[in-house]
Each structure stands twice: as structure tokens, then as C-alpha cells.
Length: 371
Image (tube, rainbow, N blue to C red; front, top):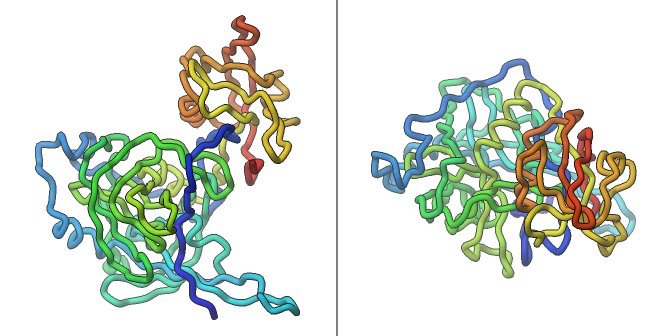
């Protein structure tokens, strides 16, 4: 069996190119289980750690408090064989995860467990347990796995409010880079509100950028604030070498928890879908691209809500239900608050004239058009 370290999806160059294939999120995947876990916000989580009354914990204190709730995840997969006669071979990958509750639910990245034939979880104290994948969401790169171990052996990490993260706040990452579990690194929040690309090529908005060193194998591990609260799952790096260059991204905890709770409850989670490609650099609104991408995908995808509503290439979307839209990112964030089937009114500029367009949102397909 070939052993592979679980790699973070690597972001090369700019996060968004000239055209962004868009369909905006408002949920997660299909899952199961019968209980919904309600996570109470940790005290003081509503303020950035840099502004809280407490000066926060040391890195050592954060590690000692949180590390029992961080697990090493080893995944076995079947992949095509290099044998010229065909067949398949087993490979294994490695990532990290966060204990979410005492029912055995563990949060990780979707790409860590995608296509898994077996999942093994290793705890800090040396114990191991097999796990099953409850569900994953490639649109947000969130996955939930479950282990059957006594509740007394589980140590959930408190969840913080990721919307309170501010540039300059101290953060700590824990994970298994290069098969080295319990590796701890520190840094700051470098930026918030970043847009990164999900495994299915749709956009994830609101990611937290950090300079804490994360490398292949950190995927799914926690990004912790100065109080030791989870504010994100480490997900991607931007690099030219394949290793940390000081630019990493985490899926914000508020988004992770929203998806995870639906997965754990067994509810199918769908994402709202518009069906347009938007120019990344538009100003004064979100502008639909004016030409097809290099793979021939048109700016307005046929058969989508956008096509049915009569949206056209070059339209500048300036408001949704009266709420001003100033950028492509703001468009994504706004549509993310709706559900498939919701009706909304888009205010657009076409030929220099304002126009209101009624649109019924659809359900996002399994993957976005590439290109």
C-alpha cells in the first residue's frame, strides 16, 4: 500500500482569475444521525481576542487545553493502478480533525476523507479507533466523521465566533504536517473575508487568512484563537513550492458548525444557485462576464435560474432585494443567506439603465464548470 501525506488543496497565483464561476452557498451536504448538537458560544467569544478583557493564553496553555481534542486521521482509498494491465491500488492519506461533541462526532475537511474506504482516528493519548464518514460537503470543504468511543475519552474543543476574528489577532494551529501529529504553530490572523476555491470548484467566501505555518497534513486541524477556541478548520495554502509560504486559509468556524449540525442531524443540505460567471475585478456591483471562458462555458449557464430570469452577459448586479451589492464577494455573501427555491429581486444596470429582475434560486449542481 502506498503511503501519501494528505495534502492541502494548493492555491496557485490569485484566488480568483478573470472570471469566477459562481453559485452561492447557504448550506452543506447530505448526511445522517438523529441528534442535533447545540454548541454554546464560549464566554467572550463575541470580541476579537485582541480586544477582550483577558490577555489570552500562552501557546503552551492553548496546546495543553486543546490538543486532547485534536486527532490524527489516516484514510485508505482505492486509486487507479499504475500497472499497465489496469486494476486499482490502495493508497493512504493523512490529515487532522477536531472533536466536536461527546457523541463521537469529529470535524475535518471534506478533502481529507473524500473517497475513503476506511478511516482510522488516532488520539493524543495513543488510542486509535475506526471511524465512519457521516457526511461531507465539497462546496464548503467540510466533513464529519464519527467514532464509537466512551464519552469520557472525548474532549470537545470550545467553538468561538469566527465573525469576531480581526486582523492581527493571535492564532494557533495544531495538526499532522508531514505525518508529525500534534505539531503546533503560531501566528496571527493576516486577513479575513478571503475567497478560496472549494473541491468542487465553487467559491468559499469568508475564509480566514493566517501566517501560522500549515503544511500538507494540517488539513482539517483547528485554527484556535488566544482563548483556545476553535475559529476555523485549516484548509488550504498558497505556495509556489508545495510547503508553507506563510499564506494559509481556514474555513471559518461559524460556517463549519452550520454545515456540521445539518450533517449530524441527517438533513440534506443544499446550496442556492444562480448560474452565472462573474468578473472578479468588477466595481460598483457584481458584473456578469461578457464572454465564455477558455473551456467554452458561457457567462450565463443555459437552463439555470439566471437564464430563466433573463440575465445577460455584461449585466451589473447592484442590489438584491434592495440591499446594495458592491462587489462579486458581496454578491456571494448575500446569496449565501438564501435557500434554493427562494425568490428574490436583483437590481441590475444594463445599457446604463436600471432594471429589476425577479429570480427563483435553484440548487447548486455537484460541481462548477471548470475554467
